[in-house]
Length: 279
Image: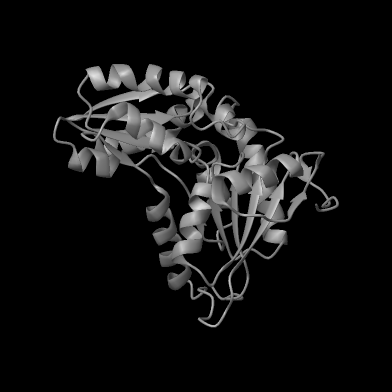
């Protein structure tokens, strides 16, 4: 595949969770231009049907490709479960990087034989997750929890409050009682509460953040397709949201220490339409 090496990478999520992936991309691929799109008009994806999420993902992918994206990072476990196979099939010339819960490294490294997976209902229901369990988790006790309400807490910027603690304690308590020694984060929002998770599980339990591995895979695909930005290129990030631009800007500052211009998008007839005025 030939293409413009200076073209941007498109990155999308239902909300701010994919910023955890964006940070890793910026660290490992500093010369790349990035477009980050948060579909906050529809967050959370995890409680929606896979068909609905696939529709959102297809429209967002079409929009990012119209913006010239040379590679798409589906920085959302639910969207990956619902749409990644489909997106690759309908865009065979476009490299895609998707998310899957890091069950393989957890299963390979567990000493107790028990690992916990925190993810959304849609992720657990998807064929991608079932395939990962079938291939890599034989002989390992995998405990699952959907952490109801956790994505919404993170979207509010509540990373360590009483309700956030309650949700995680309810999920992790039974897992700890079952002897887990590893926690897999199966939602890109969840790395933002790693400090609270580590406080609950203690130093004897490993927490797997998928972001560095996803960034490495993006780099491998760029090299494979001859698309890595020239060394002299200056990287940049453009932020877009289908939700409230003021709230998104505040979350960017809270979660990443970034004061950035955020532009808004709106939906119409199943597709993304023109950009509204920026802040």
